[in-house]
Image (cartoon, rainbow, N blue to C red):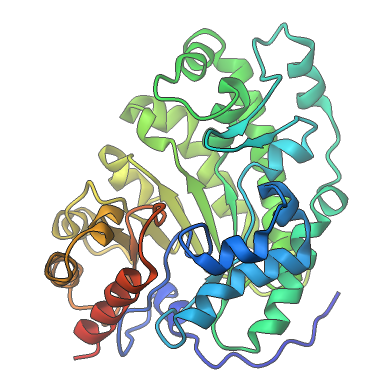
Amino acid sequence: MAHDFPPLKNDLVLRTAWGQNVERAPIWIMRQAGRYLPEYHEAKGNRDFFECCRDPEVASTLTLQPIERFAGLLDASIIFSDILVIPQAMGMVVEMVDKKGPHFPDPLKSPDDGQYTSVLDKHVDVAAELDYVYKAITLTRKKLDGRVPLIGFCGAPWTLFCYMVEGGGTKLFVESKKWIYKYPRETCAMLQKISEICVEYLALQVQAGAQMIQVFDSWAGELSPATFKKFSEPYLAYIAQKLPSKLADMGLEVVPMIVFPKGANQSLDSACNLGYNVVGLDWLVDPADAVKIRGDRKIVFQGNADPGVLYGSKESISETVKSMVEGFGGGKGGWIANLGHGITPFVKPDDLKFYLEEIQRLTSK
């Protein structure tokens, strides 16, 4: 299915991701569309979060809000969606509970649990189950009118698996650890199933109009170097290896790929060998240290200011940006500016604007 999209006017983030030298660092922000914006609440109205994701018109409107508010300061948009649409497509119920976050009323309890088998054996029609995401991507590409590229994304297999067994967010990861240390074979079988769905899901996002993709491994930091190598790395590598060939089979151009193994800085060296163009960094790693670990590998970094700096003074924001720009080598290539995780609630949009302006100012010199 070919789409006639308007030509791209700003390809800075794509050129950077492909490893080219550029005129300044491109900038986008994880969770740039969201609840810190007053216009988000207005457009969301009384709908629950997943209703917004499933309505292509609403998802598209929310995606475009930061692009319009911060015109000329953001170099990419990211489709408004959620990583947990994959477990939903696999037949699991996921609810978004106000002030609590995502909740699975019936998580996977053990390999003997009938639900584990039914989820593992279910044939997932990825094209049909997640059609609303593709519709939102196509609509958004048209509405963007070539202003900036559109990023698609998915959750990483390990992170999705954690949600599926924990039943929601957690600080202890009791169930996740129980699975990897008690049922490693069955854990790997489910991780492989999720990986295959991720590849198809991302390929269909590219077909719908996504020009770059990111894999969010939000809970990678819960793994030791040894367990990261066993329960995250092979599945992240599988996506990086299989997606380009899947796109080629579909007659589509290969797009740049970002991996964000949040918290897994002890495994940064391994992350640089996974096969992605870009590796996202959280704020717990020093940019200059990351650059040393990267060495001469042609990997682009993305990140990595503490999102909490946006609660601070303009002086603090300027100081953080300056240190980041210097650490990543000035911003003329090898770095996509972002935060070290998503923007947090209660941030004032004008403080984010100042952060974006400072990055643009300091990397345009």
